[in-house]
Amino acid sequence: MTNNGFFDIEFRLRELEACGDPLVKLNQTIPWEEFRPRLLQVREKPRKSNAGRAPFDVVLMFKILVLQSLYNLGDDATEFQINDRLSFMRFLGLGLGDKVPDAKTIWDFRDELVQRELVKSLFEDFDAYLRAHGFEARKGQIVDASIVRAPKQRNSREENQVIKDGEKPEGWSENKQRQKDTDARWTQRRGVSFYGYKNHIDVDVEHKLIRDYDVTHAAVHDSQVFTELLDENNTSRDVWADSAYNSSENKQRLAELGWRAHLQRKGVRGKPLSDREAQGNRTRAKIRSRIEHVFGVQAQRAGDLILRCVGLARAAAKIGLRNLAFNLDRYRLLVSGAR
Image (cartoon, rainbow, N blue to C red; front, top):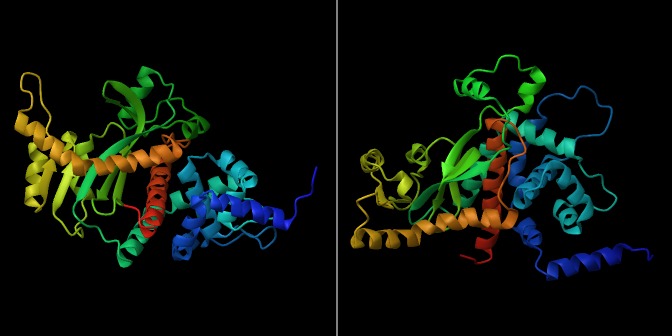
């Protein structure tokens, strides 16, 4: 077995870069220090003692969460992959001899973001940076939602009814309550049942960046989270959405707020779409499909997100971090000239 030295590692890293390691460009493009003031809020509580190891740098920990979101990794897998992959170590600025945060440290840091409700603020901070650096929202916006699955709960019918009523089932211990997700809900899409949450997003047409998002349980209808996501700063008043958002109430509300609606139409039994309506759908779909690209990129890069956490607050943080990670990577592509 040969002994690998410093120059061997440098050679391997250059090979990785030559093969198109996207993390190199991401590292060079993203202004990571812009996030530091917000992230430092997790360190505001006083330490009980100066003894022991100093906490890991907050920007380092944030970049670890970005890696998790880009590659859909659990905490244990993240710890392993950082130790195993030179590209991850380089992205984080770690050497072979540096200590790597373990899975519990990663979980604790993310949970601090949850408890302090900082994920949405981090998302908004980067959106403000985008707007200030030439990437304002332009040419209208598109709204849609995707289902994010959560681990199925094995509850009795009676327990499920109690949970739906907003109560806690009788006899559940404190430990069992911590392990049970009572916020997620069942829904159906195209005849298939899903259990979990929904990621509602608003994307601008020009740059295909997520401009706002909301997270709800999966049973909330897409159309219930609509106008509140719309970006008043977009340069256009045009709004695209699929047929799930096409209701008289939504169209009236959009008109009252001064938006121009471009909503897909849906035929019903006994009244199919006319040729003109079908052609209108095809025309609108050319724009509306851009939001499908966003969901598609997220799924293609990391696979379908399956939550490994319990409760709406933690689910919203995981989903919010994935939306932020998408924007970070999308910005990398936009800077390089991609459309």
